[in-house]
Image (tube, rainbow, N blue to C red; front, side, top):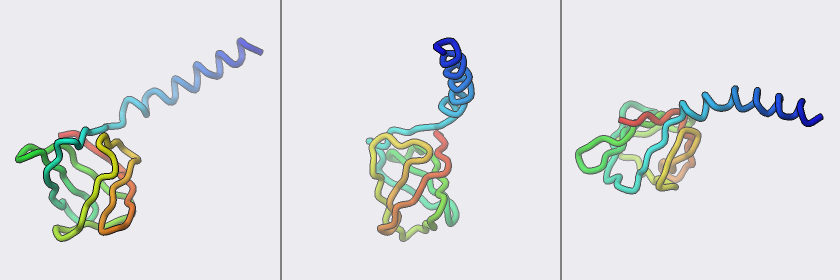
Length: 95
């Protein structure tokens, strides 16, 4: 029984590890501003330097939107608040 569990654990780790390694995360503690990049994308800045670009799943964003980041360290599948609505992050790419 123990050998089967070890083999199952090894295979599950093998399939899970690439998805963990491919997800990007960004430290937003130094974020000062953002800009819309189309209706579902935005870029976050620290001063004049870009930190990350984000694509949202179920929300639209424009230059007049009110954006609130809920965590200091943000990764794929986290969410942000856009105009009072919680929006899932589909992809986050470090710049």
